Length: 203
Image 1 (cartoon, rainbow, N blue to C red):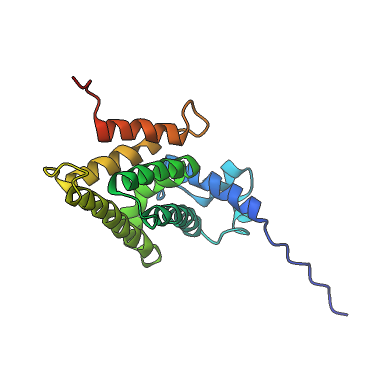
Image 2 (image 1 turned 90 degrees about the vertical axis):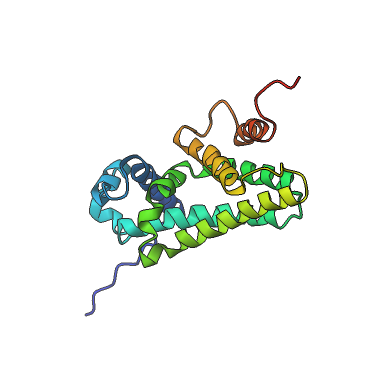
């Protein structure tokens, strides 16, 4: 008499998200290479073997963490870039969207900053380099448009300005904590005031 097969139990999406959030915090704190599946399982309060029920490797976990973050980032960025805004308004909207993404995916941003150059050398993570090129093109193009339309100063070094704004915004992932004193939108407003208008009192 044939034995009955046990029904397959599909891991819930909520549990996957919970495990990925835990893995993201471990990757962000310890680095990808130093992180083991066992360490992630320990932080999640489960056995390493049980974690393999949800993910086949730590590479799959970091892939899903980064691709989810970038998919959401580009959903927001593409909406901004397609909205027909002026150059200054586009920069303001991109900065605000960036802080919202830091709020939603702080650990993923930290992983991206630390690991993307190393990971993008692997075929599986080729989308990291593609995203970086697209990101640079969007920001540089907006700054160039602003200079051409006399919204931004003509003497700006466009690439240097891009690097300054990019690094000023995204380094915030190193200190930002969701639920803090300021909302992402308020932080964006303060940053934009300093970047676009300066900090010196006008006389």
